[in-house]
Structures are given as structure tokens and as C-alpha cells.
Length: 165
Image (cartoon, rainbow, N blue to C red; front, side):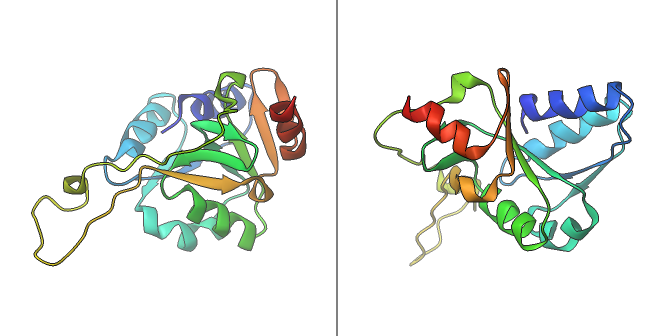
């Protein structure tokens, strides 16, 4: 779920673009349901799918639009599972647009990926099983076609230059 990505989709629909959306459920907290509800409220056709069904449905899409939590020199940070979507987009030659405001430029030296509670994956302890639950992916800029910000549309290389500046 990304308010910024939704804004881009809603604005395109308001401008008369024919749009339908395939939204992922977004495990484990199901934020994709919020996305689907918001799009349906706007009368934008939306299909909600399981995260692991991306490879099945991506041949049907024209473009992939993804929000981001941070933009770094090495890539963009977004909800875990984004890397799989980016891989599928690249494999199927679908353009991937990353959406985020310039406030998400992240120049910190070190990135620490948050690990969420194991109970989000499975609510009980499993004897002899370690459960890991990373919250975010760092996706290399090589997967992105363009970056849509509040300051314009940029190539990934331009974003890296801005982050270096």
C-alpha cells in the first residue's frame, strides 16, 4: 500500500486514462486490501491477488507502479516482496515506475532492514525452527524504469546523482 502510488493511479484515471489495477495482498499484514478498497471507492477496476501470484498475472499488465519507503544510492527500499515483483517485471519486460517524494531521499551511510515479530509469519513457536520476518527489500535501481517524485519524473541515474549531490 502506497498513498503516493495511489495518487499517481487516481490522477491518471481522473485524466481519462483507461486503468485497471492488479493489487497484491501484501503479506503478512494485508495492506493490499486497503489499496483495493481505495481504488474500488474511486471506481477504478481492481483485482486483489495473493503475493505469490505475481508471476502468473504480470504478463497481463502494461506497467508496474510501486511506492517506496526510501531512495538510496544502491536502490529503493520498499515492503518485502517488492524485489520479486521487480524481478518479474524485468523478466517480462514490463516498465517499473517507483513513486516517492523527495523527502524519501536517504543519504544515511548504513541501511538496517527492520525485522518484524515472528508471530506475523506464524503465531506459535515451532520447535527447532527459526522464523525470520524482514519488513523491507532494497531493490537495485537497474529494475526501475523511471522515478516519479513531487519534483518531477527522473531516471534512476538522475536520482543517484541527486543523492550524491
